[in-house]
Length: 188
Image 1 (cartoon, one colour):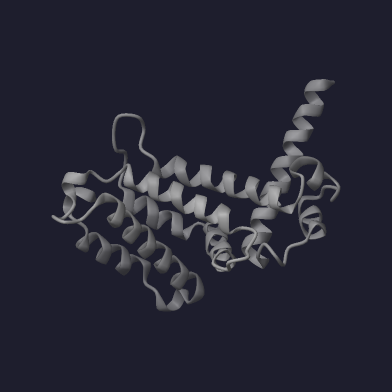
Image 2 (cartoon, helix red, strand yellow; image 1 turned 135 degrees about the vertical axis):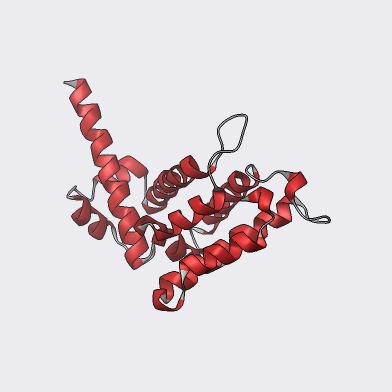
């Protein structure tokens, strides 16, 4: 009996996080209500404060969930690099869930935004994950890994935002090829 209750609790939490992620991406954090989330998840709205405390707690759960999904693909295993970072980043941009990051960015730049701190943490973790994949010796002379990582993450976020706003005007394959041509070969 206790195990079944734990499973139901975990499933309710998962459904609420998934519904909130989708709605935050579609409508924005501020424009999404508890009622919207509960209706989408098919769960009582009273479950949201029970699981997360408040809407900001739910946002934290969404960001943590999405961040884990991103980092699973970007952070190298202990002791080495894995896969092609640029290919992984460009594949991530195409995912429907990636829209959440652009929606949150628009809100996070506001000084009084309740999600600003969470988004700053998200960017810090993304930079850390990307930087872990870049060998310092592969960078052009006079370039620091930190600055290069900020530039690369910023370029990808900018491309992603442009593509989400006007997909017909942004050829992701051409952008991918251009970024690859500009990167030192050892970073590919």
